[in-house]
Image (cartoon, rainbow, N blue to C red; front, top):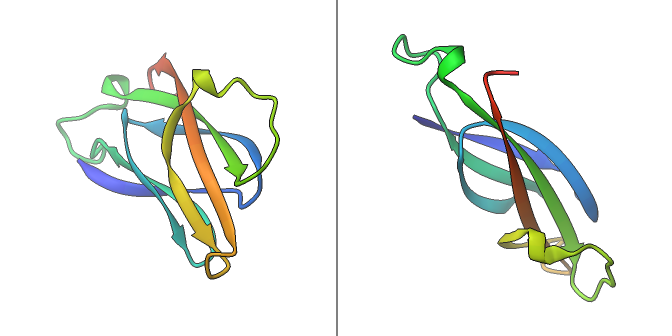
Length: 104
């Protein structure tokens, strides 16, 4: 296993990312950008083949504090809150996933 980071856009809305694995670890501010860390298989290891991978499509929903939204967030799980611009901007990150077999 290894841990990789996946940058999200620094604005509100949804973004989809395919990640080879099923474990999201955290969402943080890194250099004023929102990034998600995930635990993924070490697919360069001879024991893991591409056909063994479960590629997960995650849809992230990024909301600002006080923002009015029409999304049904009951379909999402809360991942975390991220502060940008010295704490002047506060983002709340939710996600949901769709499983896909194979290494698309």
